[in-house]
Image (cartoon, rainbow, N blue to C red; front, side):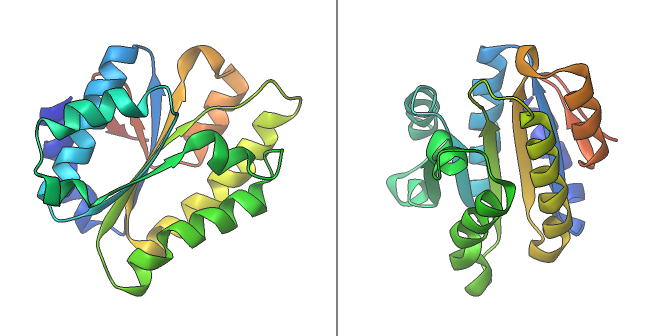
Length: 183
């Protein structure tokens, strides 16, 4: 995917931002794509807000550390994805959106180019699909204002057909382990 990620950089960066739904099937491809996205962003001068699990972040960071300098690594800002989504004990879209806005405010206030990568995971909960859709619709409206690339990664086995359809409707691009295309 690294070639594809680099190939889409100019298109996505020249647009009013890009909201990407990443439908993840293979863990190793996911890790490779996350590393490629981070490195490509840092090489372009972006700050990277990387919202990832404590389980995967060390694996991804180790690979990124092999490719970037210590100075470049300072441009990666990690947040634990469970803390991000479940800070208040439940997935409450307005609260999560406020937290997201708080996290990106240093970038927007200082007019820094940035990108985000968010691995969306959740505990078993009834009606979570509706909350996720509400949150993603709000982010989709925010993206043109902040002019950032935002990848939202979802593990395919956990995504129902109904949720997948909803996610396809509130993202501008679909990314798989091998490809990325406009929706």
